[in-house]
Image (cartoon, rainbow, N blue to C red):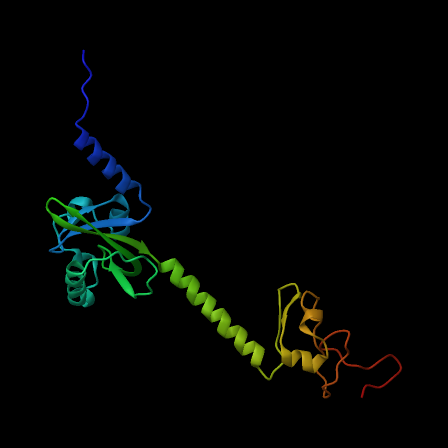
Amino acid sequence: MKQQHAPEGAQQLSASAALLEAMPDALVGVDRAGVIRFVNRRAEALFGYERGDLVGWLIEMLVPESLRTVHEVQRDGYVAARKTREMGTDLELRGQRRDGTEFPVDIALSHVDTGDGVLVIAAVRDITDRQKAEQGRRWSERLAAVVEYSGDAIISNTPDGIITSFNPAAERMYGYSSVEMVGKVRHPPEHRGSNRRDRRHPGKDQSRPGRRGL
């Protein structure tokens, strides 16, 4: 029996579909009218829709309602002056899932000319975790600046007493540099009326056996 081969065009379509499904980002293909023509599995998972619930509907269903009018204008502008837009453009973009929850996204845009007209392809990436990490980094930087420029001595340590930071005010108070103190075991300070301290341990007075402290 002679083996039947799939037409070359069908093979190319099958390969293209497999490539779209293998992409790590959510992909949404939209025609010039803003109607969704295809999505991959990542897009289904990201937005919480089945494929059949998306294809044939306007792309604005994936955009928060408060932003839909603006998005439609931007979409028309892109179709009129098409160019590739890479991810990481620092635009504050948001998507909306089927359950109504909103989330920050990064979107890359490209386009292809087909026999049925131009098709705009959006690669969508959820950047919630990235934004949280960035917020955490900024908070840490602000906290470090407060500690660094504080007029009060601030010493941070781990639960077992290992010093992790020793700010300039602490250096002035105890006479040690942060290089000398970070990594050392912190001893509980003894509260005394004098600001003079034993250089051996921050927080201890300078009195010696047999002598009165100053």
